[in-house]
Image 1 (cartoon, rainbow, N blue to C red):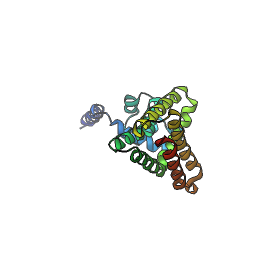
Image 2 (image 1 turned 135 degrees about the horizontal axis):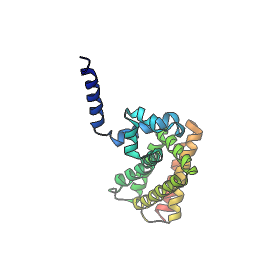
Image 3 (image 1 turned 120 degrees about the horizontal axis):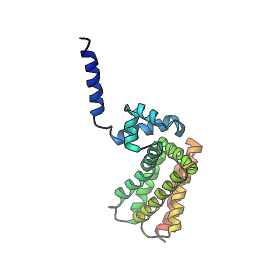
Image 4 (image 1 turned 45 degrees about the vertical axis):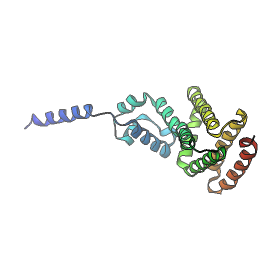
Length: 200
């Protein structure tokens, strides 16, 4: 009897070590929840591991470091919505329909306050970290290219201006809360885009 208990303990340990690594997306989900609760200061590998109910080594295996985890979260919060936009609008026949689909996505993102706050938290970190800042710059450039492919031809500077306007809208909304006149602002952006960009 005395020997069977340690043996059972060892077999549980072996089973735990041999179990397949946690799904990368599940760890990212956990990291996102930690980010929303604690901001970037609390976004530590051990906190994410606890949230995901895995060992810290599993987080390291999937992301390498806290830096790698932040990069993956940036991709999720910035690149993924742009890719979704491109996929969802490519089949629409007219430029105006594709633009309106883009505006609808902006409105949906506007309603997802947690995602917006998480994104700005990560952007603030990127501003202080040259490597993360460069990555965010590349993500932004990819977003501009995708936007131009979806909407069609037009001046690069105007595409940049429209996307910068959307970022500014999100930042203003984050600061103003429910008082921000999102519908009126998007209606104005719609008129400007149709006049100055889509019919350029």
